[in-house]
Image 1 (cartoon, rainbow, N blue to C red):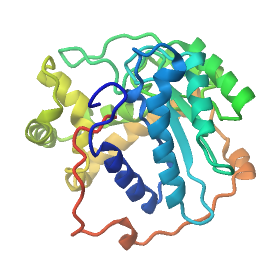
Image 2: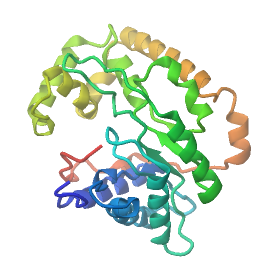
Image 3: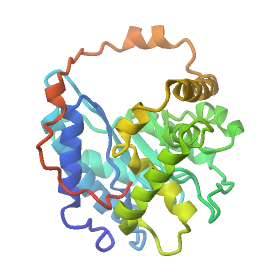
Image 4: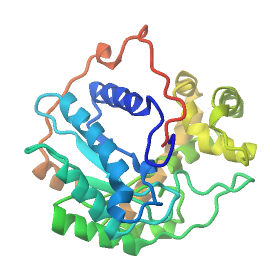
Length: 308
């Protein structure tokens, strides 16, 4: 953020470019996170959320203009920057009402809203690389989800930054009526920290981060904190290397992931729900060709430093 409520020059356009690339590649579930623009120094929730609403609307309108025929992209918004103060119903109402007021007639709005309940992307990393214990306000999650459904016909609240929480927390997400739970970092950790993940490859990934992502390192971070927080950005560069990991090692890593998937399916109460989903959801089949995924000689825009 250049100043409170104002994005850095070119950042919104870079987000639009990435969004267009994602839609072209067949991704129809997009979360718009402009919550870093919320200005808590303003007097009311409505005024605090105004910059967030403004740029959420800008990106949402762009998404709707790029949808393939017959597809409605599921859009998510965000009202509280993850790692910041916990969200309130007042924050939620201010954002949704402001956003809806800015939509043209007949344009589909948000289907879900990510809120802040005390978590952080990837967990709160201590200087030694371990994760700190944190508390989650499940009451906020339940209260906002209830208002979302009853008053605004929105699916509910999204719990992000959840994957590194203690196992006993996960069953509470269904009890709190969360519509979505983000779990990627936990799966990444199972993979990268697995005894069979090549140590040499991991060192090469960290060395690449040290060279290419040093501008995203905070002054007070240790090497362990920097590598843990940024290693998700190394997957693309080392995709081929990961594909070429020994099959025996990949088999063991997959088994560890499968065990975790099974745990999550049970805790989040989604076992044996395929028939119910198929009864309600009738997706339009989209078949992509390799050429739909971009051209090798296409120059990519610089997207360093985009907030996640």
